[in-house]
Length: 177
Image 1: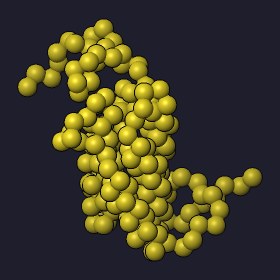
Image 2: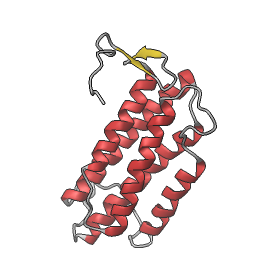
Image 3: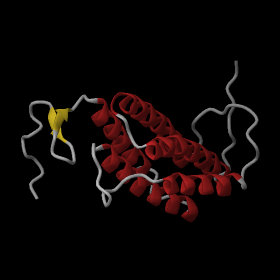
Image 4: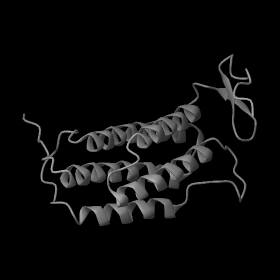
């Protein structure tokens, strides 16, 4: 498979249905930011913790589905799309991981251990991906399940960052005002 085609040299790209759009379109911004998020999540793997590692591996696959979903303006029945079950899986992990954590009583500063800090960074990129997706959806329409997924994912990444930091013995810091 040839990596370069030259088809994007003039600022256009192909969607799944082979229609051409500007690389600056809200759709491309949305799934491009999801791609960036997937790469940031990849910097945390392999994780020092098996349960976190397994969840992150699944998240990376989910994010690939989000990209495919956003890249397809008119999906067929058998095309990859985000489903409600994807967010349900995130919620199950959030609930499971939160059982190990002390309740959050105030804001915390992102950071901590190397893995915890990377998870906080992934959370911030996840929020940006969600904002790009909301913009895209408001202009072109998008799968609501994908929007819910991105919102829930930032929550999971936040909980994971706290969990990893706690497991590594790193105390959370609160901002001062």
